[in-house]
Length: 228
Image (cartoon, rainbow, N blue to C red; front, side, top):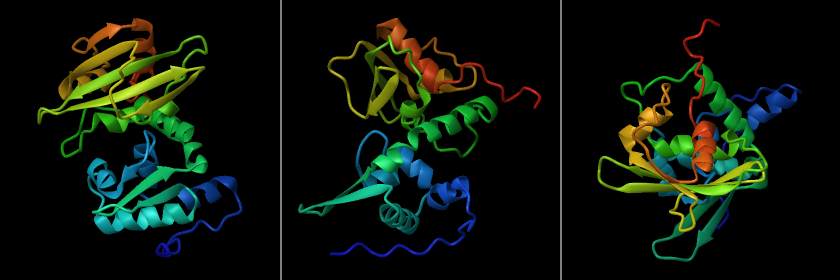
């Protein structure tokens, strides 16, 4: 069955400039966050709904159709009952991860605070930007497993692999981790918040890898309160 034709862009910039062309593709609300939340691997529609609180079913369907048509995502259908459809980043959208990292770093430097009232909290939303945020020395390589104990009693695992100056992330435990870092959701909020208070995180293993990962995804020298 052919994929639905996505609607035309509602507000194209219609300007012959590379940044305007880029924003024509990724400037819509939710598009970059969908790229972020697929950085760790393919997801189903319902999984994207879960990690993107606030997006309606129709908004998500429209964005995914548009992104598939624009070559930012692939859609893989499986003959299963119930039907299963996975969405995955293409090479084009993988190359947006450093852009997302730069945007996140700017947010850490200039807009970062403790959680605001009403904001959804998902530690994974911060960690998924790791491939764009972490800039490790080429001499440093290793695997870090980060575990977040949620208030509902479930534990989320994230594996960040650092190698040759780059980082990748998977949302799964790591049997071969060089370092394991764990804490409650509240502990991680303290660690990744503007004060970078990591005292309550439990770390076992290679401290150097732990430092590279936590420095990469956290606020090291927040400037949000500094005069512009």
